[in-house]
Length: 355
Image (cartoon, rainbow, N blue to C red):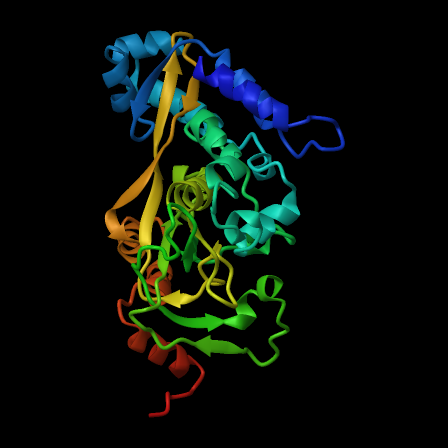
């Protein structure tokens, strides 16, 4: 079985002595639990009676699986409770790389061997160096909710006020490529926004204004999550971060390195002001067993809206974030025009750009 193979591979790396354990279960322990679950029926979409009944043979059959009366309100209340429990974080984010928080922090800042080495003559092969990323993706990404890594140490993701995280890359390391696809222009880097990344004591609010050039290749993508802490996208945001930054950005695309002075990945308010960012998301889904147990089942992919700023606007219309937050996302990653973004930034400083 695929899961058992992955457990074995991960267990070799993940020595689970008391001194090395992080909060929650180890990843190997979580996968062991998942491997013992009864046969699961996958349910795509929100945690509703209609969605579950459609996959389990109707409302009466669903009630039987859950062991409750065939009453729509009772069934929905039971599903809501079970789905909420299924999306609780069980594994610390540090279990993904198992290299320690210093490595993880440096990776998100655009450093470490994963970002700095380039494949050459059979050396520094990314699929080998970062092979654990693929193992975690294959074995755990759809069924495991990781803990959010934001902390006083992992400052890149501490208190994301705008409910958005982006990664911006300026290099590539796969198949001889040195540049990422170019989907964005870097407008402004506020050096004071990420002092624990750039190590600049930016008294007075130092910043850098970039003059965009066609020769400058930058790729940015990001995700949003709702204000409601119990919303699906909020609860699984750490898994989305792993998929976006480590599996999609690094392992699949080979995109690396940060815009100078900024993190490679972080809360959008710490990141460069850019003209555009692609939007990614973790799509909601669950699985239900013959015993009525419900587990999370996630799929990662591009947003229907296309860009992060468009996604923010849709979420604001739905009341999931504020209008002010949506406008902030557009200002920081969706103007489509660096001249406009730079002018807006300089106006906030009561400055105008000289001719």
